[in-house]
Image (cartoon, rainbow, N blue to C red):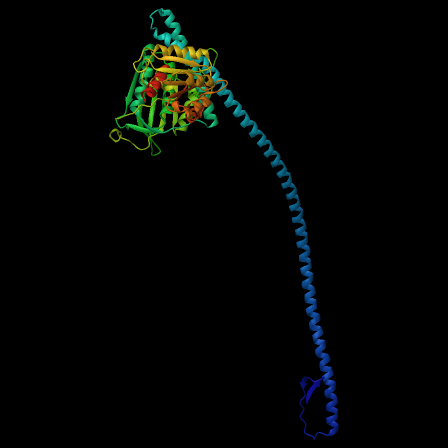
Length: 507
């Protein structure tokens, strides 16, 4: 018999009997069947309830566990939030501190830039103010040294030589200070090119052999047979370093010799050229060697020291060596002598037969190198005789000095005291063959005057030599851009000036 409740089959009841089944039996079974359906249904529902209750308990336990975990996570989140807030507040404080530091640094940077600008302007102006009187002093003392009239006594010539030498010493001091300023500000220009070693040696020999003779010292050179003929470096800076090292060697050597040795050297698989200056002078104590390369420092810094000087030379030389990728070392023994060695990279070796022996000598802009080129004097020179030159300068001392030297060389000289007067003279008088133009002048400076002159059709090819006492980094290019044919810094070296004049008159 199927056990059915509300048309849902809940089970089947199967009975077997040895007696016939009566209607009463059937009725009883039907009623029992209904009761069983209800009972089974109740049992099933109860089982479901129990099952659901168990599941609910499990879920409750899981929910409780999750709740506890959530509470822990909330605690952790609150802790993290507190930490983040603390970090945020700390970050805000750090940000404010950094902003304050940034503001202070910006202010300091502005002050440093302003200070550097003031310093550069001060040095430039001081250079101009010092070079202007120095220019006439050197020109006139050089003319007196020549003693063309043969009317100066030996004592007077000695005085003149002292004036001239002192003037050159002052010029060297000015140049050292300007060089130090350029190096500190990063404005020192390096111009690399092919340099003949023989040219370097010949230049140094011409400059220092007279000093060696005067001091009674032997001056020798040693060359290594493996030296290349040509090296690639900045010739002016190399000359400047070697001149300083040799000047010191002669300065601190009373007897014996000074030697310049040039040889290839290898350090850490890199090829160098070593220029070694050795003397038999006073020497330097070991504990003083590192200090002598510092600015304004000398081995003997006492007030009773025997040898004077600013202590700038070696400091500048070391910085120049660094700028041309070189180094300077020193070995010394007190009372026996010193050896200063300049190492510069050798680069690619160039042999003499790879160079064209048609060599063109260029006239340098820096008067410190003038003695290395063709010698000229204020005596009459065929190329200059009768040539007209216009001197433009606002300082009558310079006009007098330049006029005297130019007239002594056979030139016809006219002058103007500013750019405007120079233009008026050019408009009114005959064409000059060349113009010497000062830069710093009232009313109309040299830059503007040169631009106006070059704009005048009849003077567009007129050679103009710019003369300036300011001698800072971009002065040469400024002069060329304004229309100058060439540039020379004050104090004017007469040998260099006449060389430049001859070059442009020849053109």
